[in-house]
Image (tube, rainbow, N blue to C red; front, side):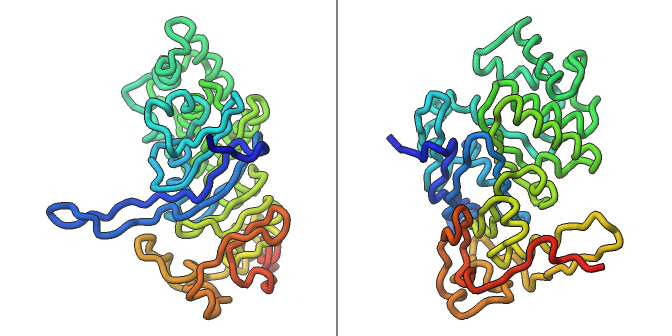
Amino acid sequence: MKTANDQNILEINHLKMHFPIRKGVLGRVQGQVRAVDDVSLSVKPGETLGLVGESGCGKTTLGRCIVRAYTPTAGEVLYQTSSNKTVDLAKLNKKQLHEYRRELRMIFQDPYSSLNPRMTVLDIVGEPLRINHIADGKALEERVAQTLQRVGLRPEYMRRYPHAFSGGQRQRIGIARAIVLDPRIIIADEAVSALDVSVRAQILKLLQTLKQELNLTYLFISHDLSVVEYVADRVAVMYVGKLVEMAETDIVFHYPMHPYTEALLSSVPKPDPLQRSQRILLKGEIPDPSNPPSGCYFHPRCRFCVDNCKVNFPELRELTPGHWVACHRAEELTLNGVTSFIRA
């Protein structure tokens, strides 16, 4: 049996998710899109790990591999169950996965397309209870009503359809569907990016409250660094399917060691309109994940690039306790944190 660190509820080792590129009449495989390319990370019980990066970097694909919406090409997803048994979710078949799906749930990005318009709220939130044979009939209605109250919705709404709700209310329904089975881990995939700013703050506060009340562990996927700084205990930064930096939130935001992280931090909007940001504008385009460059994937856009970066890919190394970086020059560079990009 696989073993994971006793301090981790989730441990991902060398995970890969490659999608085949098929061409021609016969649909022969002509290449691979390396959406997730050799990613390793861990999540401790009760913490929120923020996963950030540009669109297309593989964040969502990684989250879907964890809940097994996708079957990974290679690697391990070691999960420590509620009975203290460690299982590799990446190797389980559909039948074996069934007993663990109630412990790992996902909140999707778009509250409009993630809910079936032909189902009532009672059907949407109650469906996981029926599938897992936990409740039915009156007991199911009571469980759904309690869950709706927990996420800030009135129980009498359960007979309505999704079109009758606002975007924020729909996302609350999505959250209710995720927590109705009393899960241990929730993958929140851009859970607030489609919402207005005022509603976003309410949903973030709700997620924080539920974390404390239900003892949840979050993998919070987002491209909004301001949101991640607010909710995350640690931050992992992805670039073209690779993990390039990971550390505690304050460390990443104030003492980054990878040039890509520094560039991301420079783009964080400032709340004071009298302050202007000194943004780092990256040259070139994001590499094609089906044909990435040699050496470090970031080297075509990096202002600190040297010959070694073009040839050899940097391994993810722990340079200080808990601070992992994949950069050949990390020790010699002095990079700016989020507060350094402000000028009056």
